[in-house]
Length: 340
Image (tube, rainbow, N blue to C red; front, side, top):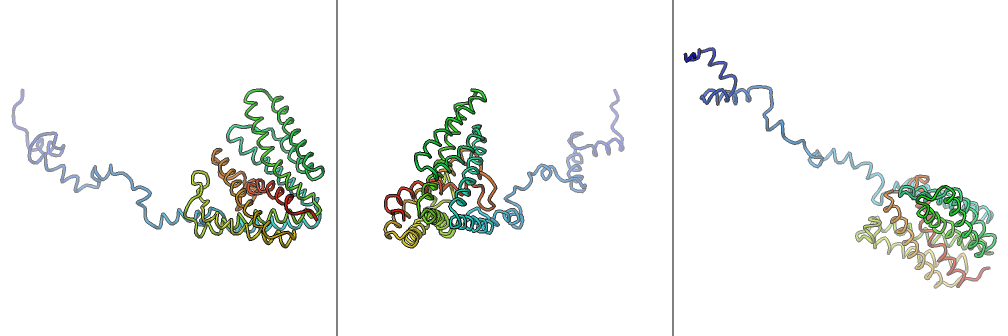
């Protein structure tokens, strides 16, 4: 066994190998000197976690928030929403006072589009609504209510439910009960409620009744949006619609009552208190209609029912309040405002 001391060359190689080669003074010091003088970053710096998104510069955060800010506090593209809203209002008013049948055609198209969008939305929850009988039934109910009154609307609704049942059963029995229930829900939610607008339209002063009905519903939406954006601090139903506030509801109430009084007195020549009752009833049902659709969308995991109307979403996102207000306005006007 060779026990001769290492040569000078061997000692230099051992020192360069690191501290594991021996406990000598040079072996402990030289690796530190090498790390400091080399281009390799220290281990602590190499293993350090990358900065989190919250630690990025302020300018970076502002750039990411720009698209959201462009839609406004209430989450809408305001210029597009105003433009589309004005355009829809012009179509409704023009169709009302040109010919009743023109507005009836608009109502049929809206009901069919609403049925299609709602059926498409329910498919996200694995509910396959029979499309053809639902759309045909929607058009039939709206026209039947105008031509034959409440009894015709009831018969058309019953026939639509039967058609949905037979159509779905013919496609197989797997999950048939769930799909049939979804189809009946769609028929009741959209065209059956829309049929009450047809009942108002059929009256001799039907265009003015529809005008008041649309007016109070729009006042609820506009008042809630305007006041809610500026003053909204207390959420009404945060788990369903986080942006809807009690302050916005107060604005909806004020706008609805004013719109109801003006519409009833000027357009229908009735007592002012009828407008107050109409406005209060409309704001409650319009809010419930908005919350109902929000709850459906939240349960299905979708943001809008469609994208046909820029700034608004789909047709159902505009029909949600109108559908629940229609039977209430029809009942109050029938009870307190004789047809002229």
